[in-house]
Image (cartoon, rainbow over all chains, first blue to last red; front, side, top):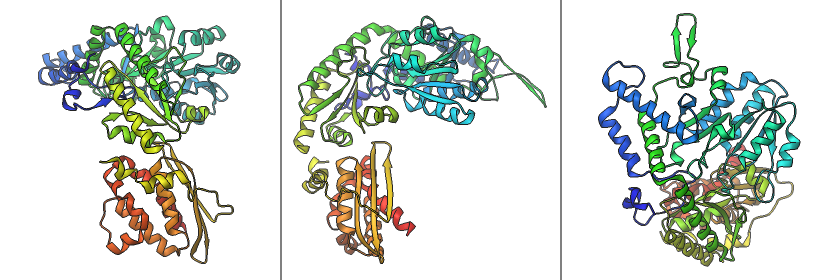
Length: 398
Length: 142
């Protein structure tokens, strides 16, 4: 529907790109915004008292406003990092002082490694107990498992809003209500990297304490991530990276740090990437996230119906209703890497392997799988080409 | 590249047959190789007596290329002495890295030369070398 807005497809006419859950392609508006920033406005933000620097600072602040509105937060609650992974690592470091031996952290088994390994490391550093929340047969969290694992020692619960491997969208409101009913002091961290392009998010309504996502999974540039932290927590938690811009006063023997979002933004920030992210949000808003959701759902259902016609394919969580436009499957008795090889020879890009969710794959007992993830630049024709190539896989391997 | 240049009948046969895919009880050396990008996970095992490889095999999962290349590897090195096998493994790894090897060394690679095309496919190099690198690690330990 929107293929012509993405220049990569003009330069790769045969490309069928079905790996948007890994990274999305960028529309012309986003590329232009970053180019224009560099030729008209580039300067170091927050420091200079000259016009150009003030313009750069304003564009940076403008970007924060856009991001805040996008997820129902306030500008002062938005911190830019280099990725969702960095955002999650940052949280794990700043929460360290709050935690003590034998405290417990609950982690969703469907988490991306980015929201799993930092907690394993924190658990090692502080002798903290790590527990996993397992899934039911539909790939949803087993709420009774969550209930059983919540204890008086639980300090935080962290999970993905949508699972990058399977596309399953967790019922976040229900999960958070359950946790907050048990104990309002338990901190809740939600990895939103796989949801922000597909669904309207309101972190305040959901009562999330920490929310992370990255620009490059929502038509924005690679290299900028978002970290939302509730204002009262920002005020309470220590800084992370020390250096320029996060300071109030520096003397030879001691320093005083800012006590707002800036304490997490030490060093010169990338206005270029912030502008790109902002342009991506404007692009999404112009189309309308509801329209994106509707189109993706139609395409997802078309793909699912086509895949179901193939008796040599095994689809995972096909009956799950609440999903992003992602389908995980395997060609029976063929390794996913061989499938992607043959598809690639037909200019079809899909992701295969364990998708940075090894504990999930082990839990599901699937060594590796193929993942097709769709976006607004995909068409039914893309899916038809995929299906044709899957028949080619069958022809070679059967 | 043509499908037939990668998924040759020889590779497909090795992949399907599970040839040399078995557990060796009381193996003298075991090495597990893993390719985290695609989930290939292969353990190679060797039984060695008087500098000779009396038995070698692999277990684990992986794509057709990794399974076939492991299978072909043991077809070649089983029964050979360690130095000879070491040289073959090194020649193979050189070939996949697109380094030049002599015609004589190429001949010693037997069926493994069919995997030469993989050197043009960076994404598959790890698959084609997983078992071979495992055996190389073992040789370095001996």
